[in-house]
Image 1 (cartoon, helix red, strand yellow):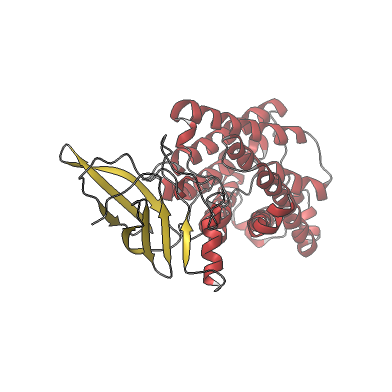
Image 2: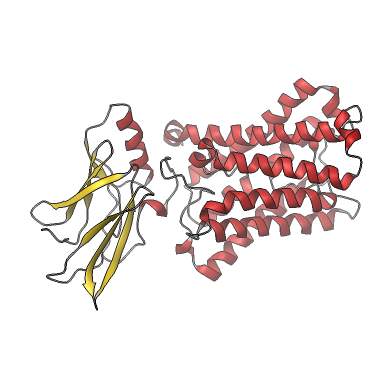
Length: 382
C-alpha cells in the first residue's frame, strides 16, 4: 500500500481535487439559483428551468474535468461506484481502487466544507442545505430504483463508448450530457447522486443521514450490473482501460490495453526497463523520468503480443500514425497484409528497424529517445 501511495499519489490527489471541484461547482450554482436572496433566483422562477440550468452547469463541469490534463491522467472517475465497477472488470489493482475511493470521499467532504466556510449562511439555508441528496415525494423505494437505473445507464454508456474506436473520444461529452439530463429530469425522484462520496460530502456538514443507505447501495450495484451486462454482451477482453478519456501522452496506472495488443498464445512477457515483470504504467513512469534527465537513452518498451507467427520470405512494413502509435504490418497472406498489432508509445515515433542476432528486437526512434521492443517471435530484417 505504501508503494502505491508513493508512486501513484498524483492520481489520488487528482481524484480528490476533481470531486472537490465538482462539489464546489454544485454548491455555487445551487446557491445562485436556489438561495432566496440571490438575484439569479429571481430571474429564473420555474423550478424545472432552475434544475435545467444547474444540470447544464454540472454537466459542463464534468466534461471540463474529464478532458482536462488532470482528468486524462487519473481517468476521471471522481466516483467510488465507477472505481468499484472497473475494479470488478479487473482494470484496477486493489490498492489503487481503495486509495481512489478514500481520495474521492476526502475530495467531496473538502469541497462542501470549503463552500460552507465562504458561503456561510447561504449554503445552510433550507433551500440549498449543503446540496444534500434525499428521496423525493414518491419515497425511498422510487429513489432506490431511480439511482440504480441512472447509475446503470451511465456506466453502460461509459463502457460502450470508451471501448469503441470511433466513440471513445466522445465518452466524456456524453457523460456530461447524461449528468445534465439526470439533474433536470431525475433529481425530483432521488436528488440525483449516483455517487456515494458526493452524498457523504453533503450529508456530513448538513447532519442529514435519512435514507443514506440508498446512495451507498444503488449506485455501486447499478454500475456493477452494467459491468456484468457488458461482459456478457461483449466480453471482459473488450474493456481496454479504466480511464474515461485516455490521453496518449499521459501516464496510466491501470491494467491498460492501450499499451499492448490483444494477448495471443505466443505473446512475450511484459518486461520493465531492467527486465523484471511490470505493468504498463512503467512505460509512462519511464517517459516522465526521461524528461527530467534521469534515465538512459535506451529503454525497454513494454508490450505484449506484437506479432502473429510469420511465414518464411514474407515482407514486413511499418506505418506511423498521428496518435503516437506504431502499426506493424505483415506477413502477406492471400495478397493482403495481415495486421500484427499496434504499439502505443509515450511519444511520437519517427523510424524503426529490426536488430540483434535472433531478429526478435525492433529498435524504434522516437522524439527524444530510442526504444527497444522485444518479441519472442522473429521479425523480418532487410
